[in-house]
Every structure is written in C-alpha cells, then in structure tokens.
Length: 73
Image (tube, rainbow, N blue to C red; front, side, top):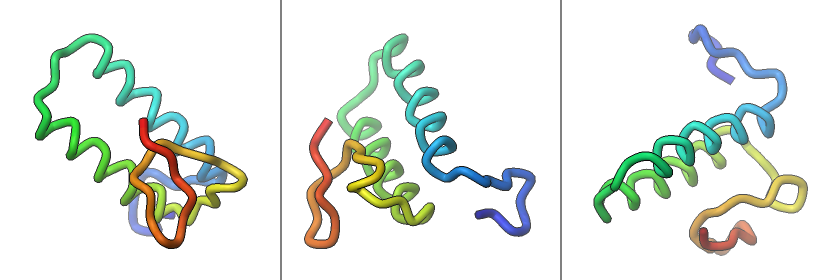
C-alpha cells in the first residue's frame, strides 16, 4: 500500500487488475514501440511484486522468474 499516497488499496488483486485494464485499453488504441512494450512488462512485474500478489491466487502476465510461476503475455 501507498502509506503516504492518495491511492490506498484494500484489495491489491483488484487494484492490479484495474492497472492492467487501463494498460490494455491504451494498448488497444495506440501503436506502441517495442521499448514501450518492454517498459509496460517491467512495470507490471514491479507492481505485481510491490503489491505482494500471489501467482497461484492471481496469475498474471509477466516474465518467468525463479520465485514466481508467471506466464508470458
């Protein structure tokens, strides 16, 4: 949670799903460079880890890692 932020989340999984929805909304309407696509993926991974989401409870698109069972988009 963002203790010093306007955004305070009680349901991290729902918050993350909303972030993905906004990203996909933009992706479906604009042509994005490969660099931007990589930045989106990196931010998804960072946010997923930051919110301490569990891949078994909330599987997401993301690069595979040794600590999480993520799948590619």
